[in-house]
Image 1 (cartoon, each protein chain N blue to C red):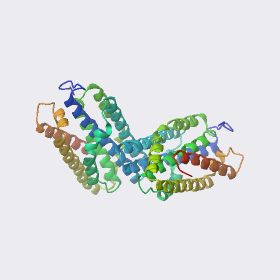
Image 2: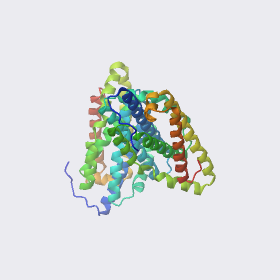
Image 3: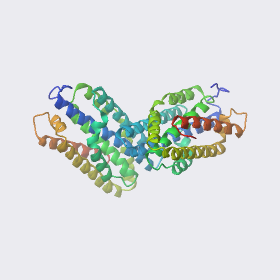
Image 4: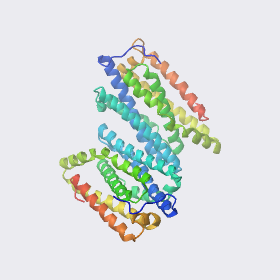
Length: 225
Length: 225
């Protein structure tokens, strides 16, 4: 992805936008870490408990990298994350998993949407921030175990496929509706996202791309989106 | 601490003992990770939430290092950890924190006792395992924030000191009684721990040293043990 402009860290509009972006990404990683770690307690085997804990730990590393980038830029992490606390609380409240498989699918889907969003945004940020975001995208093998677990679960109980497909739609719907709320209220970030030239239609187009990626991800699990 | 003998990885008694030791340490780290991550949700500020998440992430790194050592030795991690699942479940059930400060003190006390136990054991294991254990001991700055938080809490509400002191005694008591249970039932490990020459009296002496270290740790927080 090629930057549409070269953001300057001392441009006040860019600083406001990047503060929001780093804040929303960091708080998203932090709450993903907490939820995955808690949900790892539901795992049916020690191996799977350790695997989900490993995915949670990867989210924490990304959180820590984003925090470091904020500090380099002189951005206060607590201030940057605060606007997004209520949104993530609402998302997690509305997507509290009932059981291990729902928790696992939530971890996989949420991590996938977050990574797609990193890819969408990476072209609009300064080089150093881009490096941090690319680093998060490389740190990706931790979620691969989920594919086999979900496929095995469906093989063992074909009725699980319908329930999990529905759950996946629910997760995407909640993620997008909360994302839309963020896009509508954090206009500095939305403006950055669409390159400064367009309106919220562009945000809608991005959400369409995220939905398509979600569909492909669900298909890898053997689920219809 | 000087090894009392040079354990050989192919000695069956040593293998049984080290399998238990790595299993109990690893599962302890994994459950500490999960509990701390979950308890970070109780934090009153984003900063403290991130700090406790950081301590949890450090426990995960130690878990991952122990797992790697098990795999190097051809030890199956799931089998090694299984004997300790019930013990840690009982410990965490009996020490479920009521509120943020109890969770924080539990994290600090538990991490401290675990590190003291690493120090006690490091002299009895082969060099490569010793290196993994020393690595865990170096990885220690993540818990320092707790000292200021507990001291501030006591300053703001002096009645908290008595309650937290009591909670600390409770935590130590539960840790030692579950530790004694492990020592009594996992005799290969207990034999390793006391150098092969002595009886369970030596285990008792170690518990006395752990208690003294706990007292010093509580004093740093401004609490009587």
